[in-house]
Image 1 (cartoon, helix red, strand yellow):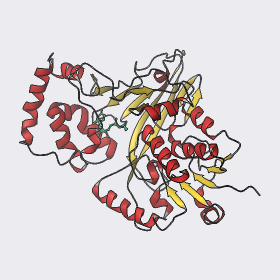
Image 2 (cartoon, rainbow, N blue to C red; image 1 turned 90 degrees about the vertical axis):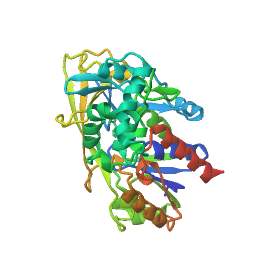
Image 3 (tube, rainbow, N blue to C red; image 1 turned 120 degrees about the horizontal axis):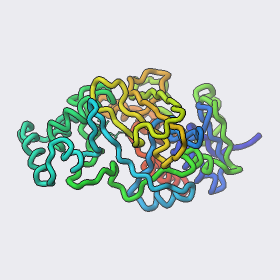
Image 4 (cartoon, rainbow, N blue to C red; image 1 turned 60 degrees about the horizontal axis):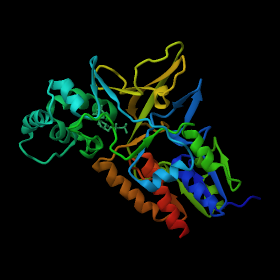
Length: 370
Ligand code: UDP
């Protein structure tokens, strides 16, 4: 019988990075995933030469030299820069909030004018420290931008009033007084030329790694716990404990993907956000633009945000006070399982970018093997 040193639950970026590093060190690793494919949510499927981001747009970006070099051993990245457009009731604005946006909104042409305008609108906060997403947004960019580009989008995305959401969510977005539409401020950015799935395939292509898809951990949890000395679990932490302390809240997504024959260019940009209340979806992704595709056809995906219910795919943890408190209780419970290590976005209930996922996996590798 094959003996494995590790069972990795979830063939996403976290689990695959760990499996790769463990195999490099001579350990034998079994990787299971409940889906029919590897890659987790970074999975891309090539259709008619276009890499379709099946679980939402993924744009790799990082500030960290080590992580950038690390990823480059598995793939070549192109020079894609994310510069999304916001569509508010048919009017287009550049994102993130920058001098182009301010010009489109107010007709102003200098940073001083933009700063004055925002300062004037911020006055309604009367100098108090922002306590929630709404106040944070107004403090950063004023009421006009809040009303047109943030309020309804955020409500659609999170299913809550911005007043009831933590301020840090909006701090992810840069505000710039330059004409710079780059959504990220990181030094490195790009899309893998061969798709994301190819990265994970490379990570998992070792004769010390055995991958099994269509394998739900919970179908055989007791057996796995008995047979594997150590388990790296990247699924939902509350699910692992059978929700015994309560259910953590997530947002789920629904994707409506359409193949448009003989439409070479549908929207002229990879990402268009729909920031009004009336449009039911939050954004449309046109996948070919991530790779500067010149195909005669195109593929678009409408992304709908929805409440997560048991059985749905969990995408975004809702890191408000209530859930953070519950998560901490699960972390305590996890301490009683010394042979199970919880990691990744779902295992640690955190909103993580891809570079953070890889950094966390490499930190675990250090702890485990040094
Ligand atoms: N956001 C917004 N309007 C936009 C884009 C983003 O109000 O056009 C807010 C919204 O609250 C969102 C948050 O900024 O949840 C973070 O956006 P980001 O684009 O980082 O989210 P992701 O692409 O990771 O879902």
